[in-house]
Amino acid sequence: MRFAITAVGVVSPIGVGETAFFAALDEGKVAVTIDGDGVAAARVGDFEAKKHIAPGSLRRFPRLSQMAIVAGKEALAQAALPYDATRIGVVLGTGLGTLAETIAFMRGYLDGGPEAASPLLFPSSVMNAAAGQLALECKLRGVNSTVNHRDASPLAALTMACDLLALGRADALVVGGVDELSGPALAGYQKLGARDLSLGEGAAMMIVEREDDAKKRNARVRAWVTGRGERSEDRPRVGWGSAPSWPEAARAVREAATGRRIDLVVSGANGTAYDAREAAALDEGLGARVPLLRLVPSIGESLSSAAQRLVAAVHIVERGTPGIERVLVPAFAQGGANVAVVLERA
Image (cartoon, rainbow, N blue to C red; front, side, top):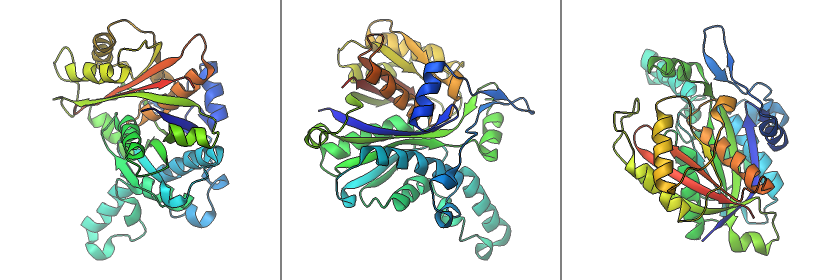
């Protein structure tokens, strides 16, 4: 069973909005810069949420949720879904969630007790804040889920969304990922020895529907989701371990490809020890060496950057040049989550 991606929305360091993001991809734009502390990071610099969210709501939503909402609204406006709002939901992947707000809320609680805990911060202090606030702002009443599998979160969200659609739990879903470069996140990365990593942030969303529904309403299908593989294995939560290969990652790739030719891999390679393991898993899973496109040098590395890689893959297969019909997007996370998804030209 295949599923239709009928719209996309993006808030990215290389461009806000689908048009700017795709133009930046075509130009090879690089958003990673070195700040005064020597941190290499790609930040969303021209993001103006007030253009998309009413002032009353804007004050209640943290920046992470604002990025998710703006990307989700772009996708929803483009899709013009005819369905009942009770049948449209959200499945969102995030690696860190609203980390800054969570820490601020807990600091108040720990310093002053329950009475000092901010009721304004509490709704944004949970991992599923962005998904819930996106649904509230867009008046979506269907299923609402948050997936947290570190780097694999957005791809796992897409596989879950496809399952929910196949089960008839929804008619359309807003699917994607979001993470931000907050102060606590930067400090955490540095403490874990990731100072040499090019960090990133942003949100990317897609509208996903069943094939029959998309065809029935004559929707513009941007790409088909035609393959999914999801496996787990024993890997450390910090670092990449000493194992020379990841057999379950290779199996996830094999399951997603299902023996079909893959023309391109939109890789998660980030300049660390991850790269060699990903390459080995891809070679084993695909049975051949396939050209790679690396986006981390342009958009930076966040725990939800796979969402931006997914939307980039939509753009690539939609254009179909040079002869690219089928693209694989993998994500193999610290902690052992392995997900691979295949997108195919409509």
